[in-house]
Image (tube, rainbow, N blue to C red; front, side):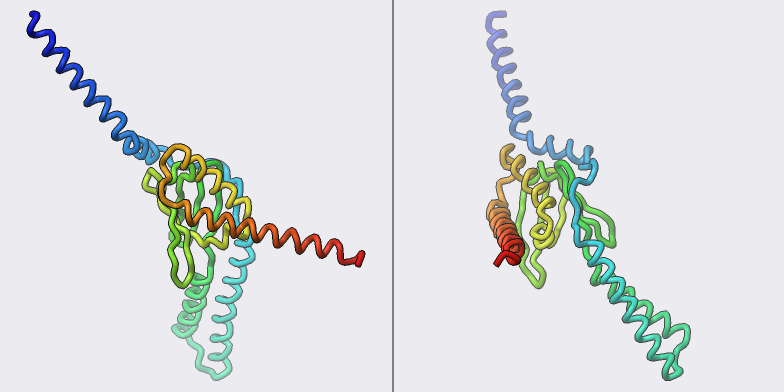
Length: 213
């Protein structure tokens, strides 16, 4: 009995170490699995204020293109069913190209809706933020649950409330140790937004002071 007791103690200690390591070594993976079963939600607290105007412009451009092509065919007497359908399709294609994605945000989440549906990320569980340069710069966000969205950084510059929601969530992600890649693009974006805000404030001060000059 005396010899078997230490072996049980050693076995118990080893098992405890395994359980301890499993619990803490795979904490992020377990947390990610929980986030998949609890997707971000809640009321939208911020949105792109320019989206409606840009969406209307996209529809106007597509409708105008289709109308011009139909009128041109009518003028020369060549309009028929297949050609009208073709011009309508071209107009719809232009709308699809020009229609902007709709960006909304709430407490701990950000969503981007396009023609193919909506994608969301947990801003309070971000793991990676990077800037993708190309013809149109994009900000790419990933969270611990596997969520991924892309958006135009200019949307955040033009909508300080959207930026505030993203920045608040990113701060919580950094404090929890999840967000380890993305400080540079977020800092650059914050400086750009602060600069735009200062410029707008100066412009408003000049306009308000103009009558007294």
